[in-house]
Amino acid sequence: MACPCGGAYLYRLVFNSALPAMPAPPYQQTPVLETERLCLRGYQLADLDAYLAIWQAPAFYRYLSPRPMVEEEVWTMMLRSVGHWALQGFGFWAVEEKASGRFIGAVGFADGKRHIEPSIKGVPEIGWVLAAAAHGQGYASEAVAAALAWGDQHFGGARTVCIMDPDNLASRRVAEKFGYREFARTTYKGEPTLMMERPARSVTF
Image 1 (cartoon, rainbow, N blue to C red):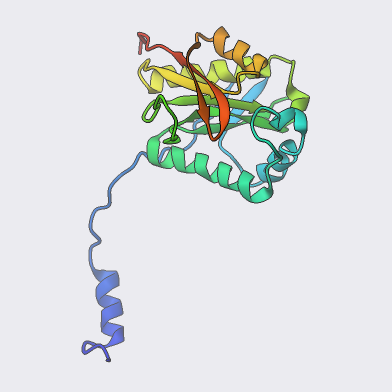
Image 2: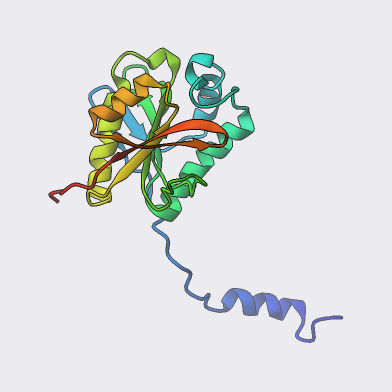
């Protein structure tokens, strides 16, 4: 059935009418954080190839996944972080080595609505991953310190958590260095999982 008002008129009506106000999520751009040796920034399209290559190294994914990620999965992970910044005002940073300009990993916060017990929904969850070639240089501590300094201000000193493979002793040492302590052991997606928390703290603005 033809529209009685005519297609051209309908086109003008729709595009000349005032649009209703849309809800306003944070839509926050990823802030850039700099440390002595690292630049924490938003993901770029060029990071995909580098991140995919990192995910092929068993030394990188041994505590993260039973297998290397494929391009689709790495791309989805990057997009998820962009969505976090847009909808929640926080997310993950790409970690770039200043001296070389290389993408070497990621650090940041998420609320993944994980189906895990005890529940951590609504609690900022910090995470960090670095290329195997970047291990043993103190980069993880440097990146986590910068992320937590930002997070303490952004979240007002609220409690944060992290989860990891219980056998990942290097990551556990980094977490403990910044005040995280074990509060539960559970099973997540069929794998044993260590849950750690950093209690709420007073923050001076």
